[in-house]
Image (tube, rainbow over all chains, first blue to last red):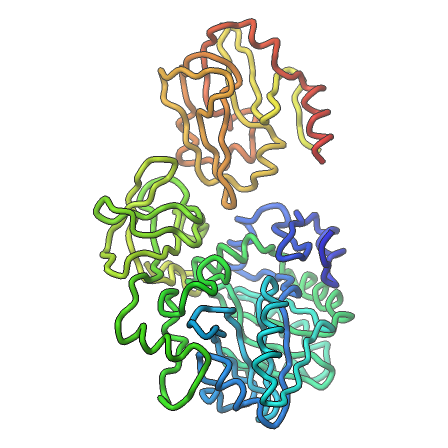
Length: 364
Length: 130
């Protein structure tokens, strides 16, 4: 038996198929992964993402520390509550993890990192933070619930209207902003589905009530299976599949998250990335769309002009498109067409730039 | 609980087999198998006229999350495949023992049917797995 979130019993009661995910017992689906996917694209779904790791960083030198720790630049965060997506790199420019960092104030930033990388991330952050005298506080007292879909915000607003003054502040939030409250609730207009919605961080003991309140508003539970197809369609990388410590952001379609300016900002891995940028990388991450029937899967080989040119890092059937799609790491000189080998047979794929779906609509 | 019709025969690898009046057999995957796989999105059927020995992989069913081989439960020749699955693989989820059939075959040795599991033995097997 793995670790359980405060919502475990609610999942079991909702007939979830529970699977191990990075040491956690998590709901894969509640009957039909496909229906849950469609629900999030068309109305709203609720996900338990309490396995994610929330880390609060405080101290006088926390901004200085994060300028060094992260490949993206927290100086882009000017307004309280604003969020930034970044990679955390090792000295070789490999990705230790991808994360969201929220700016609360000049001495307080919150990071949300992956579940499967929790131990190594905390060890790395602690090691790098030593010279900066930062206080690092892992918030395992908090649960995290994502409500996503075109109707997600109005449903959450209806729930919040019962909860003090939260609704007024939350309904004003812009994309990628978080509102933090004194009772340890924090509500962010972020997500991992390509749809509008919120990610709600809240005390463990409040999680079940909020979940039930959302369900009472007609928001249906969605599992990690749907979360994976939604993020793939939305063109969002999954750590451990699409990038890891052996690949740099430039080889992972994450060049846009590297802040090159100002040139004097020294962040971990910078030297290697600068060299890669100057010389060009040999491999890059692209999107593939299967043009015939079948399903693309992780680790299937990609061929260009008859030669092996890389492999699929995330592949699946895309419920919103009715065909199979994938991310693949391939030779950087890839053109518009390639082939993928499925069970010994080569099939035609189109090479595209993700996302595949945005706000419910196909964009490829 | 999975539906295990008493008039069918089964394999350990979750295929069902129905003996037709003309001595041929119709084959699909069980209710338990479709439940494990989840929403089906693609089926690769065998070619009509090809022959398989017992245990050969002869078809593939793919759900959103996984691909799974379908094994020939008996030795024989493929006489018909379910063409409707190309556009509607999900009928295997909704009607695994009816519209979700995958292929039909004529047998090299009808006596082989006796080696298959009956409904009780198959029910015991899936109960033991859970």
